[in-house]
Image (cartoon, rainbow, N blue to C red; front, side):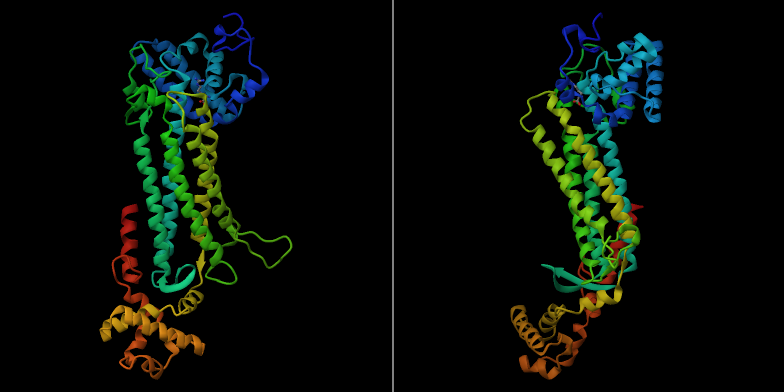
Length: 464
Ligand code: ARG
């Protein structure tokens, strides 16, 4: 190899001159794929061991490579590693440094593999870590919600539809709704991980290799369940990243809904909760302000995460098999989405753990907006055997009467009630209180405190 300077150390044989500066700029991925250094080294170490085990490499060379790769990793960890844009990506940066460290043996590492299966493997390992981290982050958030739910299993608050007061519910019930949502998110990551856990390494460029490699060995060394079964698919599949982004987008959507509730609830108009100083900011001009910035940022992060999902779907759309350089555009958006998700999960867990519900205000609000009108209609059905449609009409008339008088339903007199429906008796007043209302909602999954406690217990058991 004579002119490795003028062209390229890795494929200089075919090229007379080096790339244009613009070509280098558009081509290089080292600026971002350095985040996969650890996975790259892990993959290469597994590959070297396998090559030795099947007799393609001598033990001596394999040992030198494996040791050398650890040295490279320590240089990366300590920040002394010098990255080169000319070397394009993390794979060639690592290999080039390995060559400086161990000499000729380094050139044998790339036997029976390609950067195509190498990058697929590295990226999959990286995404798999993030799937695990998402499962963990969601677990922490779910625990924080369970703690809130348990403390407020009897606490009454208004339940809303259309953001209009609808019926009383409990704080515990509301928290547990988010537990259900985040638990489904968690299951999506677990599920995606199981499907993704096949190893691309050994697919080589696209067609497999003529060397007698043992793909089962590398797969198991890297914690995969099995090698990917089709070499073309193995190097061109980015479903694992798409599934990660999809699960992340749904999670971020749930986070943004909860964030929005925190923004509303912490406002001076609602005063349902107090958020901790730890997750709030002040204003530089208005001394009284305490802003729910963390919640607002979580509400917004979903934009980047959804953007990443659409971005990668668009990159992959219409790509012919197998590897295409387009696929280098898979990483940055996944990295950004993963960072945004982790930060959002951590901030939300902190906010939920610190949040203090304002029980008196929640209860006061629960009694507004004729929130027990459905209880009244149900009473007419149950006690007077009225068809529900008629009961709905009678109750509507009573709500109108209360509205005209400027009072709430329980403030109407028995005479008022009888003027609309003569059969009503004074046992009706018992169902008009918010506490009786929530206690009566005992159907499976309903808001009655006993139902909610049973769900809390179930989830605690599932998570332990
Ligand atoms: N940097 C490349 C990527 O991220 C590595 C694979 C390059 N393969 C190739 N045939 N040029 O996709």
